[in-house]
Each structure stands twice: as structure tokens, then as C-alpha cells.
Length: 117
Image 1 (cartoon, one colour):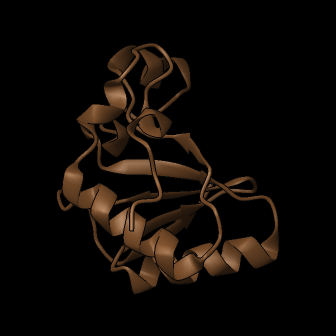
Image 2: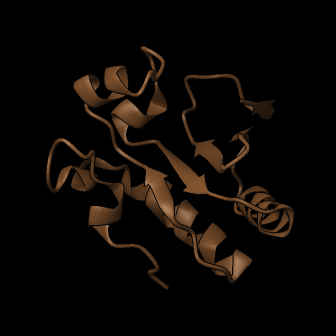
């Protein structure tokens, strides 16, 4: 089961940078997508330092090391399905915004946390 293409995770300023995403993270994300049985549109995957700064990302963003994505999400039903699938796949760091869900697998940061943007 492979739902994603590497280019979905590219930083907009460097072609093929999606190849820098962590392979284990992508396997886990793929499992979540399978469990959700709905498409995941990736708004943001890998980020270069320059792009992260441009979008106002945190200095220690997990996007910089290929351990985070933002998934487009615009309605409550999809939000519920995506959240459940991420938790079922074993993710423990999830941020919820009005139009996206951030998920990362950065073990250097607090675990078992959910936050709002």
C-alpha cells in the first residue's frame, strides 16, 4: 500500500527534496492513509531552512528534518477520520488548524500531545 509520491513532500524551493523525508515516518503516514480510506492532500512536507523561514515555521520545525507534514483538512467529518487514522497508526504529536492537520513523529519533542493553531 503506497498512497504517496515523493514529490508531494517537496519543499517548493527545491525540486525532489521530498526524497529527504524520513522513510519510517512515510510508512506510518501511509498506514494512516490506508486506515482513513480517504485521500490525504499534503500542504507541506519537507521544508528547507529558507522556505520554513518564509512561511513563519518554528526554528526547530520537524519539517526541516523530514518528520512532519501538514494535511489539508476543511471539514469536521474529514478531520475526525484523519485524526482517528493518525492515532490508530501510532502518531502521538498532532496539531489542529482550521484548514489543516499537522502531524510529526519527532521523538526529540514532547510526546502524547495535541495542540491548536
